[in-house]
Length: 120
Length: 106
Image 1: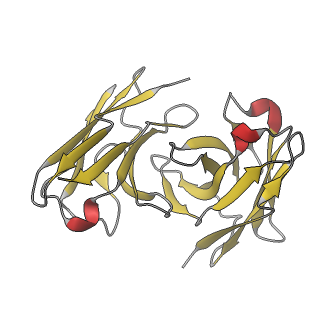
Image 2: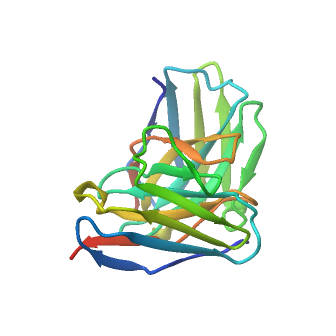
């Protein structure tokens, strides 16, 4: 059974870079049948898509975050990563990694989420 | 950007009730509309994709309909485990979610 697990610092200082990794177990991240996405959710608020990477490394980003985001794939470690630059308190949220299928492009599998707080 | 608007933002219902949640897109998205259920402290769970296809393992009391700009999620007979927040999401261009509909116990 495929599982996703986020990892990374839970506290980041303002103006620094938020870095998270999503490790895929039980399946290969190189499968051409999926995209791999990051989604976030501030406390008590809705879901915001950040961006995605394909199994071949092609990326797509939310227009509102594009200038600060990098998503990358490491097939040797079977994980993908998120970097968000120049963070502020507004970037405090639970960050989820998720798998997006090619048929209809829903997010059919999610990690449990990890809380990242931006504070000095 | 495609904006997704759900209504209502919250509703109160009783076990056994029929519940309907609507989602409107700011432009036509064909059938590229997905629905999720989220319970407190948990990740969202996919219920329906391509507007009306039930995800494997999801009870048949959940159904979806619509195309273009107007979509509906229906729960035919609300069960205790269905009290949660529901989100629609478009996958036509980039990805955006509705603001959510919280289904509470009456």
